[in-house]
Image 1: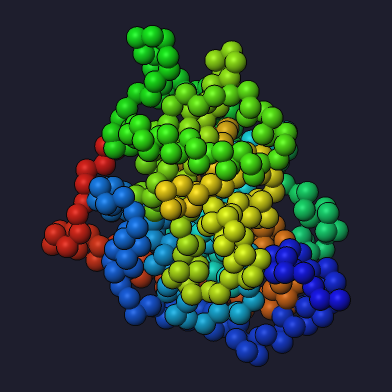
Image 2: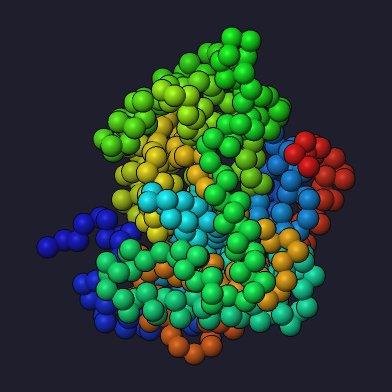
Length: 465
């Protein structure tokens, strides 16, 4: 019987032994040590970033560059497209998984699961797509190096963190694939359960992050960004260009598009949303790499005035597809054709994340694709600035284990396990490549700064800083 198209994305449990052997055989096609070779794209980082800006709001592009030029780590965070192009130019394992596409250390964090437990996991899926699995791992390890250098950690500490991250990923992958499929599927990292195993300083960071996460609710955001009009109606408190109203025609059109979203959510979520009405809509600037994409906040209020804030964020082609040139499996191509790039993001989040937002959905608006989610639902970002090296190392290991759990859902997980093996060959190769890429990323940062100084790109003052 032919396997369904969905096999491209879900766990393959039919012949794990054969797939393990196929993974080992793949070493002859791409020897593991060749994963250390960095072959940059023929296009410069500045060229790629300028090309990526072509479909973005032109008035916000200078702000994107301003945020990326804050420091080398901010540049790295915003240059996923550059890294995808560089990865595509070099050697790869050829073993594809459903990847996050932007698995740097700041794209992991704490959020509330539907049962309101606080979970640690990947939390950004804008670039989710199929790609060689080690691309995610290289993005994670390089980010640890770049962040560690930015924090001026001792070189030996940075290398130890990088090596332990790859080792933790390998051990995590072995552990996940040794579990029953449903156990692996339900597995999630609830940090409060592991607090006593952490260093004292790590536990303190966790406690602060959990406290902040619990405060990040629609009610709190509502209080910060809304004010009361003369008639008592809640109205957005503008802070352009970071947060501002859109014109009435655009707002009306967006409200109409949201009916498509309601048609796609589950009946219970649709019933919940039926108790709310849209009070206001705003355009909001988000992130570093996402600046210039269209992102709207829909402020809803319930029968007693309680707020619910939904975010509709523009979804463009994944950088793994557009710049990494990875042909996507038919199940993703079909979903994109039917529901837009937002469907790719939603599929990626639901598969890669241990427990996802019940409000996830998609819309198409004004010829563009969007995905919808609840905004700031107890989302806690781990503050990396000023973090001691030992604490940062524990954090990176947690990221690596979460990434292993995410990749273990893919069809080729057993094949990947066979390719990686149990010795240090892959560890050494990934770390060597990541150090080389950290150097390239720093050079790209300086070249972008030179382009700004020469007037080749426009850079705005960042009102958020």
